Image 1 (cartoon, rainbow, N blue to C red):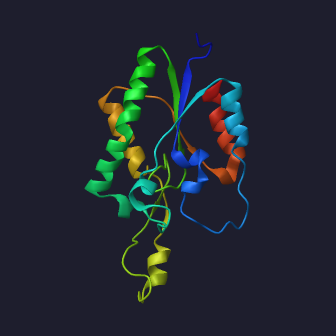
Image 2: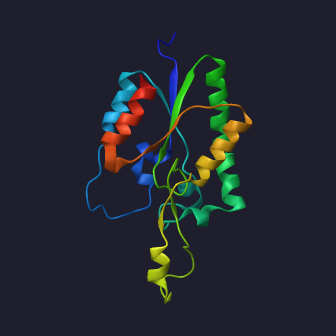
Length: 184
């Protein structure tokens, strides 16, 4: 019998950065090993959620803003991808496990919990005479990404709740401070 009956959900790229949009790293980000070690040391089960962006657009995709993903089709894909995980969550809860939280990706247009990338982005890049104006609209908005919005709706529809926290690899100290209370 399990001594610790706790499970956490992690958005896909928390532990698989290979699924993210390619970018040039100016400053090497923090290391996720401390967080994963904390989960393992505390015998927390890990559920890695799927990546809707990778599923829909592959590895060669450009960066997007939330408004580009805010379509009926993408929301449907997010709901469908989450369905098997909802069933797992229900099974864990039925067997007296605690879902201690869900870790999203701060700033992600899909997986941001409290902050998402937003802007008036779209159209062709090459011949856009207003490209600088378009780029200047991109910002972090105080809202959730599309997958997280759909997960929140699904959990609410099923009367399930647990903490949600954003992962920010560029501020590991702040992230760890938010994560430790839900793990212990």
